[in-house]
Every structure is written in structure tokens, then in C-alpha cells.
Image 1: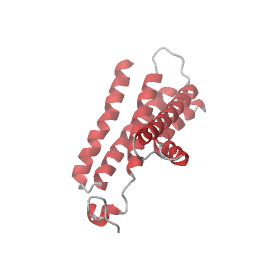
Image 2: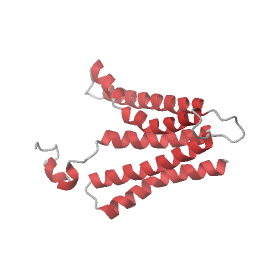
Image 3: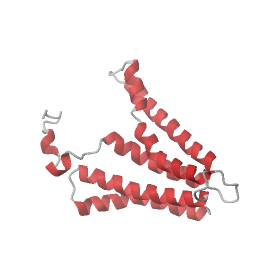
Image 4: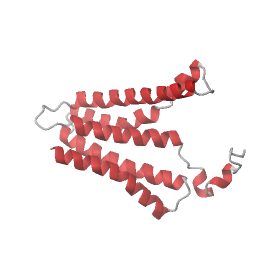
Amino acid sequence: MPDRADGVRREDAVPAGVRRHRPPEQWLFGGTYGLVLASAMISALDATGETADPGSDGLWVLFTALASGAAHGYAHVIARRASAAGGAGASRLRSVLAEWPLVAAVLPTVGMLLAAVAGWWAEDTAVDVALLFNTVALFGLGASAARAAGRGWPSSCRAGAADMLIGLVIIAANALIH
């Protein structure tokens, strides 16, 4: 394998058992961002005293993720423009499209809200299940990132638990609001 810029061979940078399962950094970043965004959005949209509208809420979550992904990708374009790297039009579009993990991470939440539209469950249940799902997914992403960095299982679980705290804080805030 080719050497990295810092002189360390890639095959030596991560333990052998972890190397072939290393998730891309962009996926971890976008996935985490999307899960936190979806959780915060559904907590904010699930207001007490308002008529439940899970379809509208789902569209707002999806629209916000698309706007956030586009804004984040475009911020990379502007930063690249300010540097000597410049960049052509196609690479600018790729920068924006590279934010797909952020949008993909909100899709389970949108799906749960759409299930409420279909009458499979109430919006309150959809919100609770989505918050729980997103919190568990944050644990999984945190543990996965730690494993990819070469940490052992106990350390990875601690990292996942720390990342899961973000979801628990959002759940607590949702409970306090209601």
C-alpha cells in the first residue's frame, strides 16, 4: 500500500482486524450530524398543544437536512476557492453531493414520521421511537469510529456511550419541553 503523507504506511496505521471495516470519515461525520439534526428537529417540531402533523414534520426534517447538506458542501467550495486549490465546477458539485450521509441519516426519522401519516402509530410514538433509534445509532457510530481508530471494545463502548449522551440530552430536553 502507498505511504501516507506522514510517512506511515496505511496498513500499519490501523490494526489488521479493523482495517477492512473502516468506515469513511465523511460517512461518520455526516451520519452523526444528520442524527443529531433529525433528533433536534423532531423535538422542536413536536410541540405541545399543536395539532399533530407528522407529514409536515417529516418534510421539514428532510428539507432541513437537504439545506444543511447543501450549505455544508458549499462551505467547502468557498473554503477551497479561498485557498490555492481553487477547484473546477465538477469538483464543486462533488463537494455538495458528498454530504449525502447527512441526508441519509435523517431518512429513518422521516420514515417513522411517514408511518404515522399512514396511521401505523401516533406521531408521539413516532417521535419517541425516532429519538430512541437516533440515540442508539449515535452510540453505534461513536463505537464504530473508536474501533476504526484501533481502540479495544471497552474503550469503543465508552466512546459510543459518550456520543450517545447527545441523544439523551435531546430526549431530556424533549421531555422537559412537554
